[in-house]
Amino acid sequence: MKGTILIADDEPLARRTLREHLRDLGCSGEIHEAPDGKTAIALANKVRPELMFLDIVMPGATGLEVLEQLACETKVIFTTAHDQYAVTAFELGALDYLLKPFGRDRLERVLQRAQATLEGRSGSLLSRAKEALQPTRALSRVFVRDGNRIVPIALASIERVQGADDYATIFASPKQYLVSIRLGDLETSLAPANFLRIHRSHLINLEYVTSIEPYDATRVEVVMKSGARIVASRTGSKLLRDLPL
Image 1 (cartoon, rainbow, N blue to C red):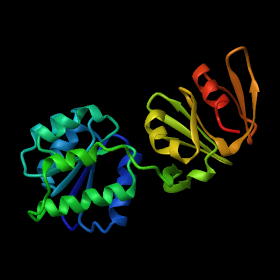
Image 2 (image 1 turned 90 degrees about the vertical axis):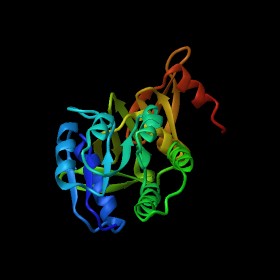
Image 3 (image 1 turned 180 degrees about the horizontal axis):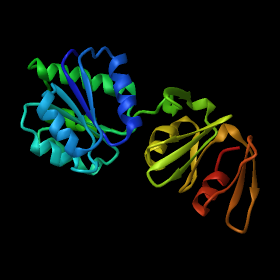
Image 4 (image 1 turned 45 degrees about the horizontal axis):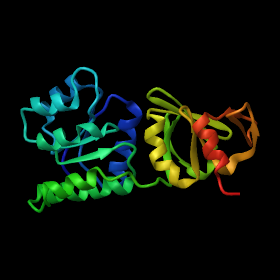
């Protein structure tokens, strides 16, 4: 794709990761960035992008408000962790809808469909909506910020992930990485790769468990290879007890 692209997202890491994915996939046109809704509106109307990646929840104006206030013809793809807006997005004419966290393969398919639409070869709205809302495929790696760089972290090197509100800390010895994503959203992609949610704030890689010990009458404590000790919730304790030997 050679046209101008605008990425509107209030998270710098999300913008940078998407930009790098786009470059890796051969997008050679100008790529602009907007950190909030009002900037997105002004910048879109100025540079008139051919394609716009638009987050739903942003300060200044939501992605839906941005879409409604565009004064130029722009194809829009929503990028968000909040799937409850999907129907509204398609009703407003969005080209597609990426549920975070999404991988390079999913983005490549979206770009191919975007190119087809720009060339008048687009498929039905129903087919696009169905694929957009399919569960995200399991990841083979995650991209994180390491100083001024964005680096890939193999899932096999991740011992555990600890969540706090809209952020999660990835523990991959000997480093820790803070990423802007809810633990529940990350769990969707990590669960098939030997990860287990044992507490609302803790997701562990079972390959790094050294022992599971009684904590009280209903809960167990997980000891990780790093020495970290995590008390599982009652539900998480039952999941651990039910693991096949």
